[in-house]
Length: 65
Image (cartoon, rainbow, N blue to C red; front, side, top):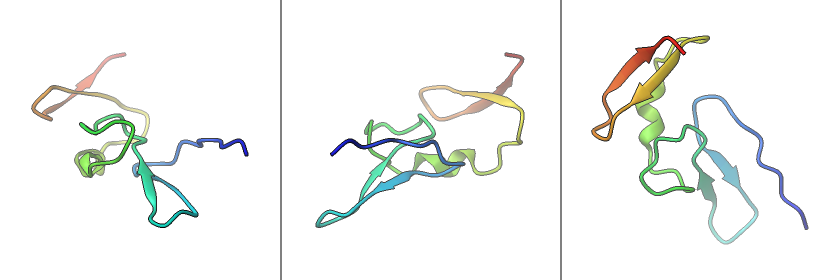
């Protein structure tokens, strides 16, 4: 059976059914790729239409890209 990953807004993507849910990172910040580690909470207050970069320590800055 083929699986399709669809980007969701500001949160992880749940894959089920399984014995336990598997959460796939959609923000790109997880240190446990491809799985979510909760890092998306850093991006919760990002503004729509803006582009942000995060450094290795998780500090955010807005970019002009």
